[in-house]
Image (cartoon, rainbow, N blue to C red; front, side):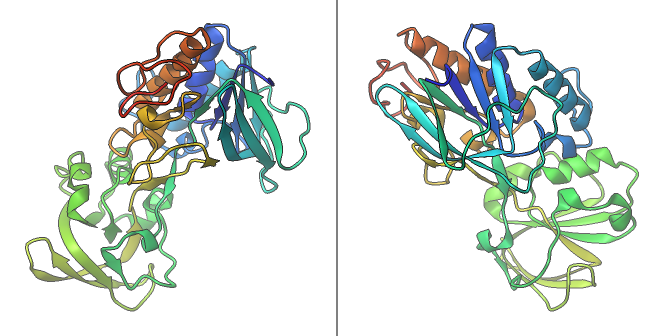
Length: 336
């Protein structure tokens, strides 16, 4: 075995798994495709639901410093896990170099040089690869977007949307982050979203700059994202509305991004812990659409590492349901 625990993903969940594993004496190798740990976290300007942190870059730096002091964890940056195989006695993770990424050596990161398609082996793996942004092709309620270069809301320059009407396609959490980070913005946000995403609107529905429009269908008119936008909407109530804005941005949400192979997914594409092979533990945002928060990701990473620790000692684990026999197949709700 190359190590006691393989960790795929270097966000808050994966880093928390590495620290927890070290605290109980497990060696780990953390595989991260980016050039630095917590890459997505570095783009979050305001954090209000994590203890001791007020913004993403500072929290990422603190996590990175903790990993640098974690002697039992080796971090391999610029490496992508492409396949996870799970067997009765081990897991194997195939990794490929990400040639476009230049690793940032702020942690003890390099590890040995590895040929493309090399494999790492351990008794257990924690998969914490998170989620990626959905494109318009994944939104069945949104039409006439082919060939349009619509920017993501979280990438928008605040100066470019100040004092303008912005058509926000989707009600995902980055809107709340932008609103909290820039209370001085005089922008008007017209937010269109499908009814199944209503639960996402709670944190921004009281912002006077936001108008919420639940729709069955939205058709964008001709033009570009930066030109005046006209859209025809069919609301949930059956009303036909014409919406106008200065520009349009995407805020459709995310989709889980697990490696191929042994990671089990549900009908929505997410990877609940209780459905996994006994040697595979999932953590962070790819577990569920409803619990995508930094704090819950950290907690789940620590829980996953403890699950691997208990399993290595032949003890029952409890990740997502009642304990099952270690080494046996997962039950209908419980992991191994």
